Amino acid sequence: MESLTNRKKVLEQKPMTFAERMYLPAILSGLTITLKHFFKKKATIRYPEVKREYSTNFRGIHSLKRDEEGRERCTACGLCALSCPAEAITMIAAERKPGEEGLYREEKYAATYEINMLRCIFCGFCEEACPKEAIYLDGDIPPASFDRENFVYGKDKLVEPIHKK
Amino acid sequence: MSEKVKVTIDNIEIEVDPGTTILNAARMIGGDVVPPAMCYYSKLKGSGGKCRTCLVKVSQGSAKDPRPMPKLVASCRTTVMDGMVVQNITSPEVVEARKGVVEFLLINHPLDCPVCDQAGECHLQDLSFEHGKDQSRYEFKRRTFEMVDIGDKIKLHMNRCILCYRCVFTADQITDNRVHGILGRGDASEIGTYISKAIDNDFSGNVIDVCPVGALTDKTFRFKNRVWFTKPVDAHRDCDKCCGKVTLWYKGEEVIRVTGRKDQYGEVDEFICNTCRFDKKKTSDWTIEGPTKVDRHSVISSNHYDEKELLPVIDRKIF
Image (cartoon, rainbow over all chains, first blue to last red; front, side, top):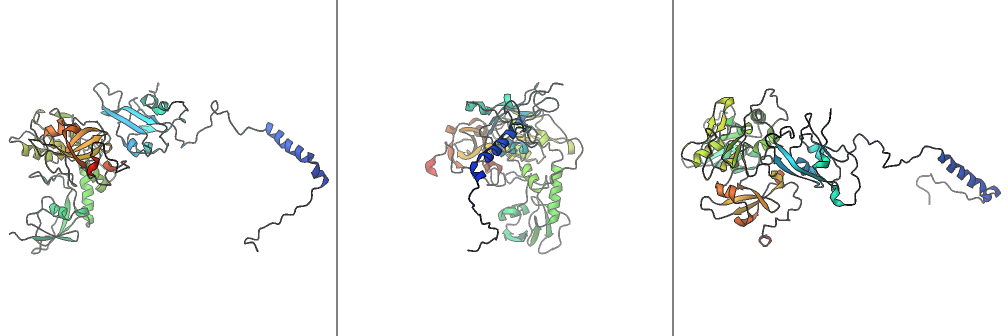
């Protein structure tokens, strides 16, 4: 049958010459390629000790931000939890008491704020939904662990530390 | 004069009783024709005419006098005439004017929706989403007030108030003497109860339900949860003071809020008493009727993926 593309190549199979039948030249040329790679730059890195640079739009562990005066920006509005397609975020709101103005930005704040990193798909919707610019996925990859409980990140792990000037 | 009058709203003709307002005639038609209303409340006598969001264009006054009305009119205060032709969303003038009204209403509104408990069921939020511009041209300081406790169950955030007077009319209707009103004039006006005096009446909690914004909120529900994470359930109980028909708002198996039953315009069917509203927060206090019908596009019905999964308190045999 005539081929559709006319690009078919008919392969001729000639019997091997004596030199080819020796195999040694082919083996040697293969070994030189292997030897050359010993002196080339390695393609891999030693991961946990050495880390590659992340791309600028990489999304890792969330962090809850503070404002210029070190107050927590999150006001527990629940829009991150509402937008979360994996339902990974839960929070309990509380009212700011007099005297806590230096800790929290608004009169309401998140008393507990938990993200389940096993549920989270790192889509970044929470970051987009946040009206207070309080949550950003600017962290690392969540580290491995033996226990599931260790993947539920509370405020102790999420809120960024107060900047020291 | 008991004959019905004919009125045309957005090219839809309807016959209504004489003396009906344009707004109520439009509500009889229903759908997109209904002008939004922030201050008018059908259960409150004398309400309406304050917020101007229900502005419509009357392009033909009546059959006898077919001249158009010179300015846009407030549909909640204008009664229909025979042969009247009204334009609501079909008139670009009305749509433009409504944008301006929303901008004016938002001038002093703090836009603290992330903090406000009303967010998700706030009429001003819906209104500005549907009719408003996305930017304000106001550059000056917004007026600010201290928060006031009206009694131990109601919190007044005067910052959020749009001065619709609904709560004032409610207080006037439930009490004999005037205990709750507006102090000051113009830009300085504020809701007040004369030296934070408590409205001690069995029905005072209804000012929370009638408030279209988050100015009057339930202190027992304050910051407990966002409205869209709770599930509304219709329930009733035998109450010697009120009808006892309410909506319970569940979080898990816990009743975190009790409100009156609201219709599609956000108006309660019947006022409920403070005992039902603030003190009966156990499932055992109530007879559950079934889940409240929530508009599919409402934020309250969002994230509830499985609609068949009923709350454990609802008797499965009924459905």
